[in-house]
Image: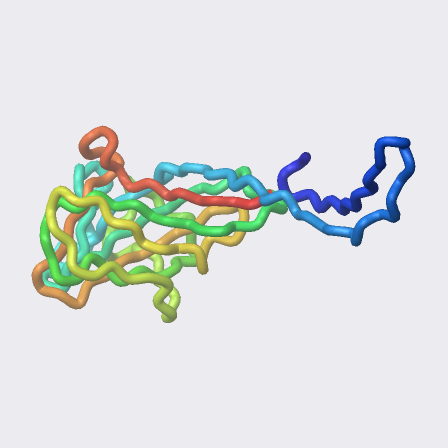
Length: 191
């Protein structure tokens, strides 16, 4: 049997003499589809600061969102391997290193041309107005998931900006930070 395939069955019984009974009613069965999970490390991750508008933080071991001073987190993922399959879920995992009542408000960024080692506050791409996800209270040492299923629909480059409304900002590990704690995008697909 193949995952996701549909099969139709009926049963015919035979007595000891080999005589067949009339066939039973037909039953249709669909074999559950097997999900595939893909994992993506960020192609780029950094943050920008309003109070240091020409500084670049692409080499930092942390990513920051804050409202005082204002800091915006930027993430970019290059997604491939989805093809015509259906995205069931897309979850961004972030490992927190600084507590806050607001882990971040996430927005899609259509311009994916920014570079991790060159972007700064003055050159940072604008985000769309509609929020795609949010992360509430965060505490150090914990990994949190941000649901990005509404954003990730197929192959391509995806860029995000996260902001905060809290003056006690949240920080998380960047891809330059501790091994195994970098941001990770988990995309689950059905055939």
